[in-house]
Length: 184
Image (cartoon, rainbow, N blue to C red; front, side, top):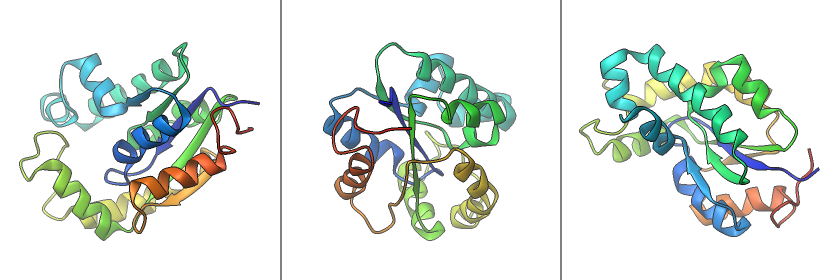
């Protein structure tokens, strides 16, 4: 069966927002970023929503966005928020027919550096999680790894040593090299 959507999952800093557009271009599909979808739906960045309503509200909103993105008529490449794997319904949606999952991961030190760079040091876009993002992300990796695996990813890509083009190539190759080439 041809995948309707390709969903990139992984922790913050794993490269979903960077690799996703490259995959989308290679497949001739639109790219839908979870952060942009969240902001469009709520009028706030992830950091602003967390600060105003708390982490639980942020994660609920992120989990509400995924089914809407998967229900879209147009096939796409979707970068999902890391928190979606905490939700059993979201994990089930990621295992549904027509959904191909690519799990992006990297060493926590790499994730921490990327997290800090993406936050611009001011936390304007992403919520801040303590003084040492690498330690926070290492704990998240340990806790969430079984849940990412439960999504039955078509491919697992270590983005720590790959540039975005090489990471995208591994995803496209796992899909069979062309849009609609994967089976589930």
